[in-house]
Length: 335
Image 1 (cartoon, rainbow, N blue to C red):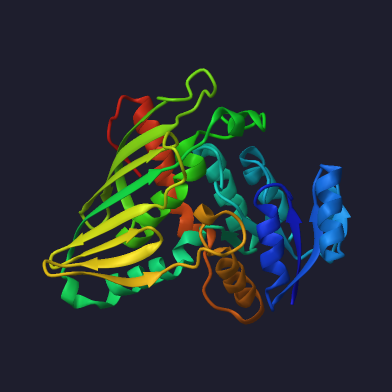
Image 2 (tube, helix red, strand yellow):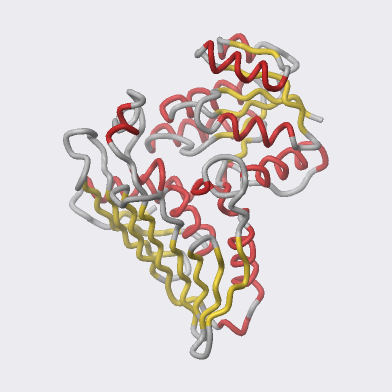
């Protein structure tokens, strides 16, 4: 059993803490937060020790795994320090806020010899897991010919004004794309076999004057297997609608919508799976945090698969390629 410390007990930190408390191979040992009220809440809830200083926490030899649940601009810095301090780590999205940070984290990870798990939890949703299995095993579908991926969520001025780092290039690294739609890009890369070339654009259609980053993005992804994926993401809708993801095969379509997986043929549409929408946290975060954490701690104790940093590298490279393409008028970027 590995001792874990949750760093950042704001929005997503409580979800990590609850998952750790329920994980048979993990011991929720400590919490670290600079906000005294949040820190005390976690201490009282779980009866654990608390730190208000990240550097001091890293000096504790009993801390074996660090969960980084802080604002975006701290992700790379804290992950690098944790790895080089000899800790394994679980890192919330995004892994970095630009390509330079991603490269630095990649070097530190390689040099450290430690394990780094990325929280790309939607891969483990029941519907997505079945979708991946069908892609790999169901020959009756025929060849995959294309992917369409759409996200329509909602973020208002109050959301961005609630924290100074939000809505800024320097501290958030972007807007709808890097914060919300990163999970949808990840599903395209994961299910489609990797992204190779990108053409993209970004704009601010609703929240201009409030944020300096985008609330809308679109892209054309050319995948490594030669097919195309069309992608659209916006924070300008009236609610946080479930992702819409459709994979077109020669003989059928597999559609992920309303947290369900459908198989659509010329004759019928059938529900193949439905996700658990009662997991901790917000519904649109998905139900996979517990799965990711369980798999990682099982791997630490017994070996086995988990979402390693390198597994999510193509996702981050594709995301930054959308921004780079947009900065250059939509020119094609090769990853």
